[in-house]
Structures are given as structure tokens and as C-alpha cells.
Image (cartoon, rainbow, N blue to C red):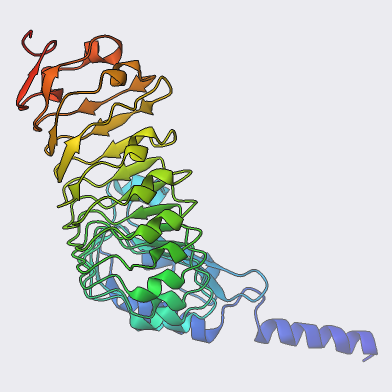
Length: 365
């Protein structure tokens, strides 16, 4: 046999011994352990999890060069044909196997909206140094957020909302220098927001509503120059609103409602031209509404209801460019309601239960 023939035989032997699309035996074993800890009774999404080419398995994709598992994306709410054919959303029980941590090239882990996956987040997930997306929303995961989660230096998205997670926000979370989206809402988190949260310099969304967070709002939040959306509503936050929040350059949505916040409303919150949605309702805010509104004022939603605000409604508010929804009810306001502009389209409920407001749409003065 010539040299060329020997070379071809060698290639054939190698191809048979190591199939081109074969995943590593370690990755396959880790995935099968992960599968074994879960029960998906209706859709059969794990029926494809056979053979050695795990990139053909439902929800799994691999690096095309190394053939190592790179992404696990399993969503219980999806437009995938498998859901449309079944005519239902996903449902899964079980827990997250620590074997996931053996997938050391994993960049995306999404196990979301399966409704009944329980147990704790494996602490070893903090060792997955390539992980960029961790999305576990919409389950019944309990326990605490791993204290070392800040070791995930490549993480850009952390979504743990709609679970039963307890404990406090780990101080190490401020080490996520690349984190863009943080969603911890609808859990049972306690304790305070880390005082140096301003270190998460790339953060654009911070959603932490519907927990039991206490303490005050850290002034370092104002250092998050890319922050567009901040939702701390329905917690137990106290103290005053840091005036620095009004100077945030791209902040568009600020929801602080249903807390125990006191003091006055910083003037620059109401004059920040980029802030379109401001909800400060159901707190203990007091003082007056400053008469600082201008023709460029633009709010799609301004809710200051259920506070202790006094004096009168600023006349300049009627000169605002746009206020889509306004609620000043359940305060201690007096005097006449300004006329003109959007005020003419508001209902009485926007002004009800004040001390002595009058004028349309309430009784005439």
C-alpha cells in the first residue's frame, strides 16, 4: 500500500474512532445527569437526548470547533412548534443537578418558566468562568443566591425572578463588571442593597421589586450611568430618595412605589428630561410639589398617590408637553386643579381623597 493509501486508511480509522460531531463523553454524562434530575411529562423535549451528537439534542448547542457544550436553552414559554403542537406551555418538576458545573465551557444556561422546578441553585455554578447568561426565571427555586456568584466575571444577564429565593443579595454581585441586565424580582430576598452597587458599571436594568429588601437606597446607584430602568417597588425600603438619582443621564423608568420612603421629592427627579415613568406612590413622602414644570416636561406615567404631599398642584404642570397618566390622589393637597392641556382629560380618581382640592373634574371651587 502506498503512502497515500496509508494516509486515507488512517483518516478513516480516526473518523470512525472520533465521529466529527461527537460531543465529549464528559459533557454527555453531565447532560444526562442534568436530565435525570428533571421530569418533563407532557412535551417529550428530552426524547431527542440520545446518541453522541448532543448538538442535535433539544435545547443544546455546541461550539462548532471544540464540540463542547456551549448553550443550554430550555424555555417553558416558547413559540417553538413543539409547544404549539401540544397546545400548552411547559411544565417540569425536579431540581438543577450540580453536574451542570462539569460543563466548564458553558456560556448560556436558560432553564426558565417551567413552573415547578425546585431545590436550590447549585453553588458550583459560580465556577463556570465562561458563563454569560444565567436565566432561571419562573420556577420554584429556593435557597439563597450563591455567595460567590460575583466570580462569574463574564456574566451579562442574571435573571432569577419569579422564584422563592431567600436570603440577601450577595455582596459579591458588585464584581459583575459586565452585567447589563439584573432581575431578582418576585422572590423573598431580605437585607439591604449592597452599598457599592454603583460598581456594576455596565448595568442598564435593575429589577428587584416584590421582595422584602430593607434599608435605604444607596447613593452609589447614581454612578450607574447606563442605567435605564430601576424598579425597587414593593419592598420595605426606608429613608429618603437620594437627590443624585435625578442627575442620572439615561434613566427612563423609576419605580419606588409601595415602600416606606420618607422625606421630600428631589426637584431634579421632576425636571430630569429623560425620566418618562416615575412612580413614587404608597410611601410616606411629604412636603410640597415644586412649581418647576416646563413646556418640555414629558411623563407617560407620573404617580405620586398615597403620600403626605401638601400645598397645591403646581400651576406650571399644565404647561407640560405631555403627561399620559397622572395620579395625585390620597394626599393632603388643596386649592384649585389647574385647567387646560391634559388636565381636561383626567378623571376624578386622579385627585380624590385630598384635603381640599376643587375644580374640574371634582366639584367646582
